[in-house]
Image 1 (spheres, rainbow, N blue to C red):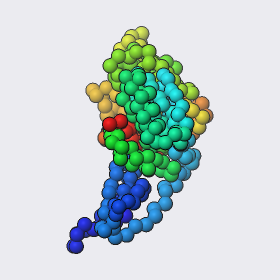
Image 2: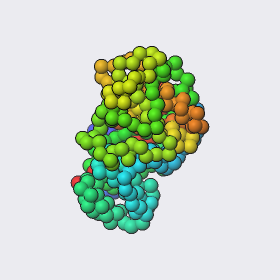
Image 3: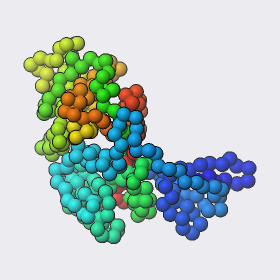
Image 4: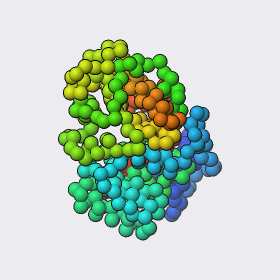
Length: 318
């Protein structure tokens, strides 16, 4: 859509999904989940923009719904409940991805009733109610974004879901000899992660959950070819990572590097080692999630060939 606020002013464009056109005002939800309102009187032109093709070079074509379900299986909650095609997830507050509604379809009841049910469900567990809503790809949920905003729900964070070919990551010339891969995590790994106040049983259950889970770590003080000594399990690693292999997909997450050892290629080494293990298990495509304000991580993933498939936003109940 293009508009002009006053005579002589420059034209501006807004690209997104037209979610309503009422009382002379157009509401458009952008791929970043933001709602933009344009007065009908200022509208100059509009055109249909086709959805971006699902296929990217080297990555199998995938729908939003398939990828959303793959991502969800990598962050499994401690408890969940179905509400029609919605899934209510809780894990005592550890990570919004396991403590939010995943609305993949019709909840089976009117929206206001579904939202009230979600608020009661999370309130009964001492948690705020979040809904995870996606934008920016074919079949995503721009209309639901607009409806939540109209009801006073607040968008707190926006995350990119990126995809890329797996083999190029595994083929990188990285110092993988420093990386130790394990089926389980240890105290040192948890100490580097630091995304929680207390690493209770619920944290371990979420992190260990998934179809085929691998944990990577670069023990502190190691050199090339040295995978750590007896104290590696208790020392805080210089870098860590987590990978969940699920059919053709390998998901990368929890890639953390000690600030004192950044720009040494440790994040790349961790991802390369995990990618090689995932390739051995038959995976061919990769995904990851990165918050939009994490510029350093986004730069790394750009360099590794990951592109944005869609974005999701966590809306919190007012």
